Length: 118
Image (cartoon, rainbow, N blue to C red; front, side, top):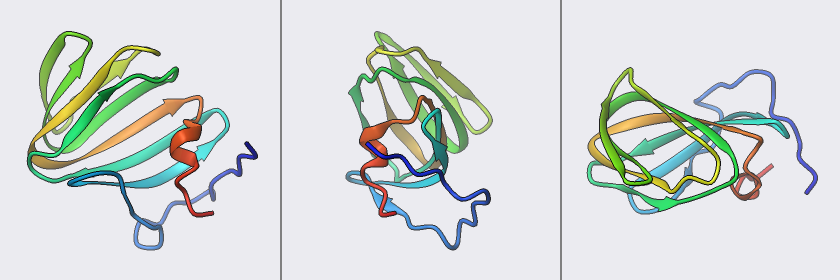
């Protein structure tokens, strides 16, 4: 896949927001082949389905309350909290109170990149 780098500056009012499932939308902040940062908006009760991928992931809770599940452990995280997910671990989340996550992946997730309309 031919990966283009994002622009050096992200202006949230100018960048598209993509539907990512029921009650979930995402906006791509910055990326190249080595890293990807994504802003994810969750409605109350929205579920980030359990899944795995071969990327390291850090998730920062900007706002809201989320039950973050990693393997068989669930932790309730609030604004200002974060999680670290090693590659290939089964993980997901449940939005308890509407909120926003910032997810950072290394390397870039090609499956998400393919949804960007560049």
